[in-house]
Amino acid sequence: MNICAVVMAAGDGKRMKSAYSKVVHQVAGKPIIKWVYDALCEAGCEEQVYIVGDKQEQIRDVLGEGVAYVFQEQRLGTGHAVMQAEPFLEGRGGFVIVLPGDSPMVSAKTIAKAVDAMESADYAAVVITATADDPTGYGRVVRDENGNVLKIVEHRDCSEEELKIREINSSMYIFKTSLLLSALGRLSAQNAQKEYYLTDTIDILIRDGGTVGSVICDFEDTLGVNDRYQLMKASNIMNRRILMKHMMNGVEIVDENTTWIHTAVEIGRDTIILPGTRLMGNTVIGEDCIIGENTRLDGVQVGNGTTIDSSIATESVIGSDCRIGPFSHIRPGCLIKDHVTIGAYVEVKGSEIDEYTRARHLTYIGDSKVGKNVNFGAGTVTCNFDGQDKVGCTIEDNVFVGGNANILSSVVLGHDSYIAAGSTINEDVPSYALGIARKEQENKGDWVTKRNRLRGANYIKLDNRRSEL
Image (cartoon, rainbow, N blue to C red; front, side, top):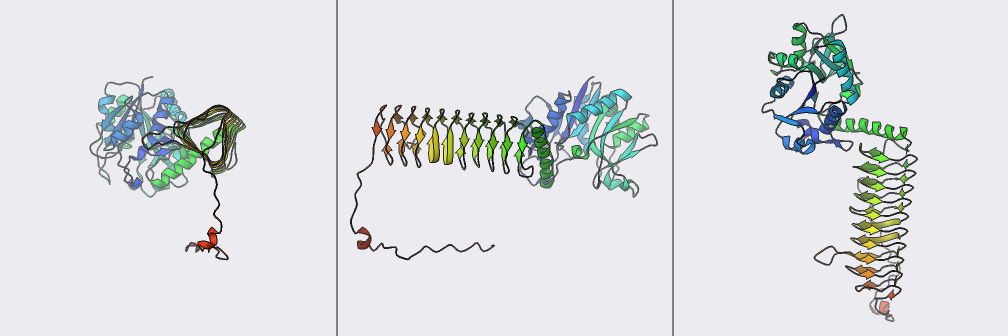
C-alpha cells in the first residue's frame, strides 16, 4: 500500500516564549519533531512532507533534506496547513497520514493500528481518538448510532451537550489520499475563528457517503506540546517509559523521580542507577556497573563493572572495572582504559590513560598520554598550555609522581621514573631516574614575632547566614 505523511509544523509556538521553533525543543534527548519523524518511519512511512513556517531552518537542521518541505506563509488553520501539501499529494493513491508536529508521544504502534483499520474496513478516513478525564480545549468526537464518527467539533464551537463528551480528537488522521484532496477543495472558514479546520473534512467525507472510523489510543499518546509546562509533562511521561524499558531489561533504577535517561542511552543488565543520575546523548553503559549518585554522563561509553560516583563525564570512553569519583570531571576526548582510578576532585581532559593508573585526588591531567600503572600524588598538575597551544606531556609506564608536582608541556617522563614531591619538571626525565626540581628549604628564625604575625586568639568569624534563611 502506498502511504505518505503530512506533518503540520508551521506554528509560531508563541506560548513557548522561545527563539526556537517549539518542535525542535527536546523531549528525552530528542527534538519533538524527530519523535514524529521516527514514529512514521517505524510505521513504514518514509514519504513525508513537513509544513513549515518562519523558523523552518531549525526544523531542516534536525530532519535534514531526506523529507519534503512546504512553506506556509499564512496561518489560517489546520485545514489551510494541509492545503499547502496539495502539490505533494496530487497523483498519489493509497493513504495519507496527517499528524501535528508537536506530538512527541505518538507511537508507530498507534499509526500502524490506524493504517490496519483503514485497510480492513475500507474507510474514507480514520481518526485517532482518546478518552480524557478533562477534555477541556480538545475537539469532541461525535458518533452515530453505529459507533462510526459522525463529526468532530472544536471545543470553542461545541454545544452544551457536546461539551459533555469525553472522547477527544488527537488531531491525528489517516485519509484516502484522493478523498482528502477532494475535501480540501471544499473547505470554508465559516466558524468562530475564521479558519479552515481540517476536522471539517470529516463532515465532508461523511456527506459524500463515506464512512469514517476511529482508533482509540491511550490519552498520553495524544499529548502535544504548546508551552513549557506541557514540555515538562511530556518529558516526565517519556522518561518514565524509558526507565521502565531499562528496568524490564535488567537494570536496577533506585529512584524514578530523580533519574533522567535520554532515549538513545543503552545500559547493560545488573547495572545499578542511583538517585540523581542523568544519562544523556549516546551514552552506552556496560553490565554490572554502579552509576551515581548525582552523576551526569553525556555521550560516554562505559565498560563492565565500573563505578562512577557523583561525577561528570562528557564524550569520552571509560573502560571496565574503573573507579571514578566522587567529584571527578572527565571532559571531552578522554580514553580511560580498564582498571583505572580517577578519584576525588580529579579533572581529565583530552587524555589517554592506560590500565591500572591511579589519580586518587586533586589532580589535573590535560592533553596528555599516560601509560600503565602510573601513580599521581595529590595536587599533581600537567601544565598543558604553553601560552600559545595546548600541549600535554607524556608519562610512560610505571612512573610515580609525588604530591604537588607540576609537569610542564611536552615533557616526557620515562618509564619507571620517579618525580619528587613538590617538583616543577620542565625537562624530560629519563627512565629509572628521580626527577627533583625544588629549592632547598630555608627557615627564618623569629620571623613571626619580628613581623608581628602572631595569630593568638584572633579566630576567624563565621560569615553571616543568608538572609532568606
